[in-house]
Length: 110
Image (cartoon, rainbow, N blue to C red; front, side, top):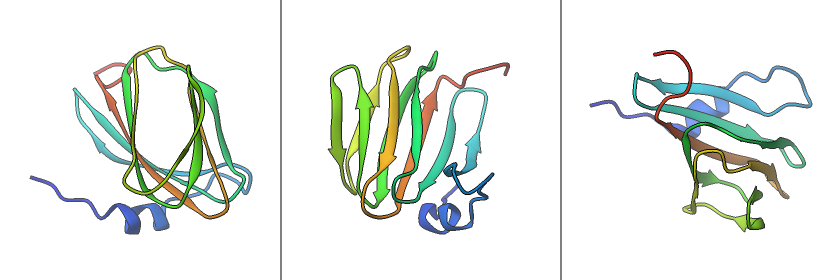
């Protein structure tokens, strides 16, 4: 068993540059991957697709997620499920948004 402190890991996540959200790979196995995102207000993960199912759990903050059904506001405790190949993206609203993304099956070579 592994237990991860998502808020602490997200706070320490590196930022590639000031315009892009911070990310950190938390868990990576042959069948699933967990990535934490920390988005400052106004930062965006552009709409994209994945060959896997993507489950987003909102850890803290508020934001907007985009999917086939349009845009929805999310808050801590919400879980958002995207089917494989469903377009999805996210944006921080008025505060820092921390999201845990579970991607399964794990994309790419195993």
